[in-house]
Image 1 (cartoon, helix red, strand yellow):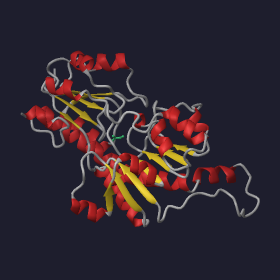
Image 2 (cartoon, rainbow, N blue to C red):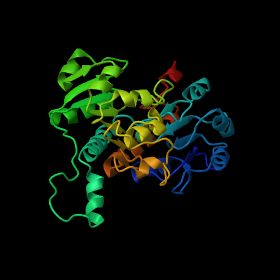
Image 3 (cartoon, rainbow, N blue to C red):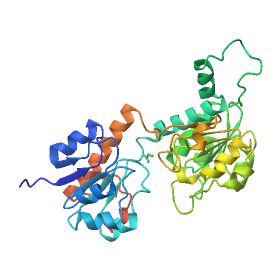
Image 4 (cartoon, protein in one colour):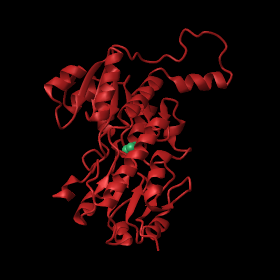
Length: 328
Ligand code: GLV
């Protein structure tokens, strides 16, 4: 038997990471387009030294028991890690890593693209032309809302939220943010951003962009009341995690004209079935969780996920641990 570490990689990821893992480890690679079904995942983790997981894999006590006590590291190919039961990992002394930093700007780019597409009704315009309806220049055709000079409310002012502020600044927007941790006065000044309470942000913003982690506190943060507090011309953008928004309340708000439009990269549930009412609404743009999906960024994420995995297998500190408390 080889004395190389045994690892499970739960989907094909870019070569920038996979090649490094393959050079150092015996790799069981799940090659399907869909994630491994739960029973398959539990079977395959048995006896592994390292797990390179995706946000579609739930890593909890059941999985850690199935893996066994030799498991040294879990490396998540994502910045978000709500799929990991971090306390369970920490209790067992297993470090877990994520991929922060490298996808910040790419994700903010997509959030801004959704903001613009929803404001200016780009998908509706594309469908209009494709469906053969374009017969003349229409003085009232597909009127949207202005982006320049509007107020952008950013909920969650971490790395990605701040990049969103920069993009808004470039369009001459007024920037409000809400976060439990205030930014420093220097950062606020540099980004031209003002901290407000959530109620004020919802009421004052023309565009509301969500950049919080999914936690018990942020689950359905945007519910029926929050949507009612928004302007009827407001555009909601979600590139964080689907369950931050109550999907039934959003559907009602979009259908009843309580808000103008939404742009969603993430949904609850995920994937969103094609026959889900949100998909049918003309003022709702849904894309399939692609915010970090550029070749360069996914390559960097893969390299980072490999670096975390290999560090953990060597017993070194992970470059980007989500539970640094395991190191005492
Ligand atoms: C994607 O959603 C990520 O968390 O990286």
